[in-house]
Image 1 (tube, rainbow, N blue to C red):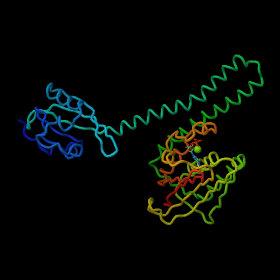
Image 2: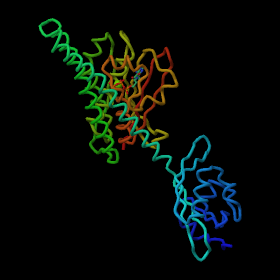
Image 3: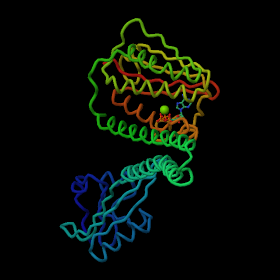
Image 4: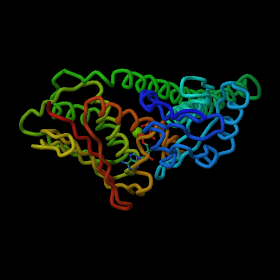
Length: 346
Ligand SMILES: Nc1ncnc2c1ncn2[C@@H]1O[C@H](COP(=O)(O)OP(=O)(O)OP(=O)(O)O)[C@@H](O)[C@H]1O
Ligand SMILES: [Mg+2]
């Protein structure tokens, strides 16, 4: 019979690992393995500990054929289901013949893979809709509407709108990639937020007037400077104000405020808080945590109609993270929404 495996060897393996003898009984388990299965004590049959046929048969085959085997093992940890890639390798050492079973947690890898696939699917879908429209119009212009000059004007205008949407989408995607790339480098430029917000308000006033909305902002009396990237901060304020105007509805008021906070609890220091509040229809609570996900829109059809790509708040979130700040969204259906961005002063 195999000797118990030297525990220091198993403990040195940076993965949950255990050693089973040729009769598939546990001869040693490191602390990481005991976290997955606290019963994995000396002499316990492996098959009774990890009751998943795929894993058990991999261990058995490994012991019988003396060849390495792979299996997948699922483990529930609280509400989360973890997925492990398990490798079984035949071992024949001073501690006897058996197999070394190592668990590699691939939950996150799988999630990332899923996110990447969802992302590609979303981008393709978002691009395909306007592209299909443009192709349809080209066909019509080449055929039935060839000599119809009124139709040509109309179709060209729609094609320009659709092409504009694709252009915006690509622009937003590039901007998202750029913010993600820069995310580790904290911006150092000193930015006067009061002046910056004021200039965004000025440039969006015509848009507000177009939908009968009022933009209200009182710039603070003294400069509120923070280390920041002014282009990116303009993007943040623009996105939030545009959303408030787009989703707040006609004839509403969008109020902006900018205040110094002596000490923000979660940022653990002095900060500046920007709030953009609208008195529109508000947002149901279930949507709030998901608003900053890429392509998440409450009413996809409506947002698309307004030229939205669903990337605005995802970009805002990344920019705020890059500035080591935080974001908070408060909303009660029927009573408007307030989007807050809190940025550290130093
Ligand atoms: N002030 C608001 N009131 C109500 N809903 C909002 C508000 N701001 C955002 N939303 C909702 O959040 C969704 C996501 O917003 P986001 O800015 O990320 O995308 P978008 O506005 O649809 O597109 P884009 O910003 O790329 O033009 C919107 O589609 C809308 O449903
Ligand atoms: Mg938006």
